[in-house]
Image (cartoon, rainbow, N blue to C red):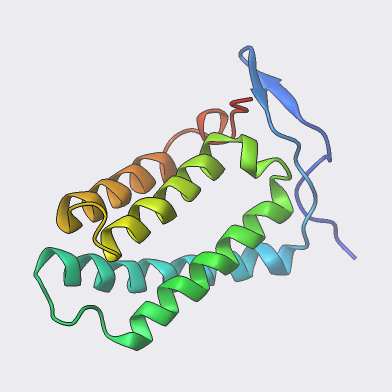
Amino acid sequence: MRRAEGDGAGGRRDGVSMGRIGERPYWVLYLSLVLRAFHQVGAAVFLAAWLFDALPGPPLPYLVMVLASGVALFLTEWMRHRQLYRELSGIVSMAKVLLLGAAVHGFLPGRPTVLLAFVAASVLAHAPKHVRHRLLF
């Protein structure tokens, strides 16, 4: 049986502390690719609903799709990046959830907050690996 990515150790790149990396089977990697596609579709509908004042909000199937795929993606990332809660990517993911929750429940203005969460997640998703998985503490 072929082993998946990962050496089980943390590392340093250009003087930057990186979180520990664990192993995950290749089928989990492929599953995460499919989950990411579902998440992007659900997120696109969610964002469009906020930006274009769709009432009462995004259709329930898309909301369920974005929430379920988001949780599943977070878990598949945690399998690989064992210190996700200390890495920039994990902190931004949690901040995104808090910002979206604050917007949905009316604690922060909806449109700008949702847009901020999406932009922050998009920028981080395309940042180099040594930035995304940098240890913050």
